[in-house]
Length: 251
Image 1 (cartoon, rainbow, N blue to C red):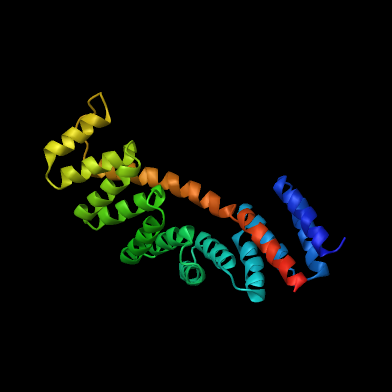
Image 2 (image 1 turned 90 degrees about the vertical axis):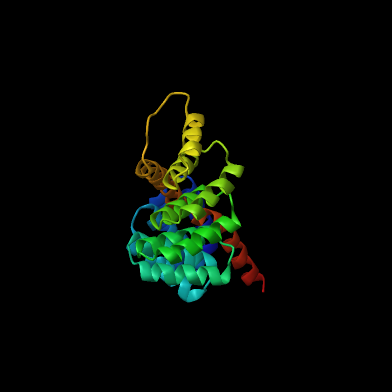
């Protein structure tokens, strides 16, 4: 089999969850053609799924040396984030956004990078960018709400709650946080009304800190789902990468 046939067979094995077999076939494709970029990208994706970021980075860096695109910069940004190399993660995500400024997940991940680097003002910019691109993005909204609450920017946080609840009026976490914000801002009557609507049973007094803790827990759950999606990101890019390779062959 030539590298294309090996690659296609590897892709079938990968989709079937047979990652060891897929890896072996991708490596065989690279033996025939060390510059076969789709195989490098998919090997990087497999190593990412297997929680081996150092190996994943090696493959993605090799792919980057062949061609720079939004996918490889995003993938490198996410893997460097996993290894807590936040400066390199930020650098690659910024490059990704220079190529495609509407890459939603890159904005979200870059916000997390800046939060990890304790640069909340920069994180806020990218959470807001993500919300502009997708106002219903719960992970971006929760991230921004926690960011603003930590900075005691309660008025702006309340505005974010109001805008999101127009889209998702039944979101219990954001409803609770809105009640907490109203309480923190001294509007106890509205806060009590909000809490009564949240539950028929009286839950008693809940501090703003409790509302924040609940929002943080929900945000952590959202981020867990987000990063699982990041680890599986290569599948959605593989089709366009294969198409590019075909176009190059026809040229």
